[in-house]
Amino acid sequence: MIENAIRSAVIWVVFAAAFGGSLAAQDKPDFSGSWSLESKVNGADIPQALSVTQTVVRTNVRGEPMTPFYKDLTVRRVFASGPQVEAYVIGTLSGMVSGQVGGDLNRLRTHRRVAWEEQTLVIDSGSYTGAAPETGDWTERRERWALDSGGRLRVTVTTRSSGSVPITIDLIYRRQ
Image (tube, rainbow, N blue to C red; front, side, top):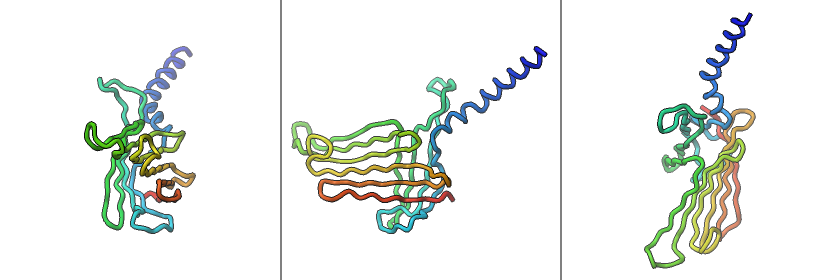
């Protein structure tokens, strides 16, 4: 009886060690794969297809096991004019200031944030020439990536700028 209980416990520990890492990585959606546009939206700036690679990290820098997480996302968007590839590091905030030291204070600044909000991956990017975001000449773009109940990829894109009204479009992609 005790031997059976010990054997069951050992089997459970082996099972948890073998499959626990892959289950933990599943608490966020995996967008990897090839996707084709299902929405009836046309335009030169609408990607008709996506190819997505999402990297999972399972070990630390010393090679020791750790709770798996999605490290980055590489997206190949296919437009009418041809493909474009962008890479995003998940969980980061970055930016850049152009110009030279002591130069114009109204130089172009850019920023990007890539982070999970619950089960949705949010990619914020923008630029501005003023002292802070949304000052001077500015643009903002937000992409919200989520899987719907049918397994389709929903990318909601909102663009705003100092010179126009906000525009939001919903793009639905079907996995190939």
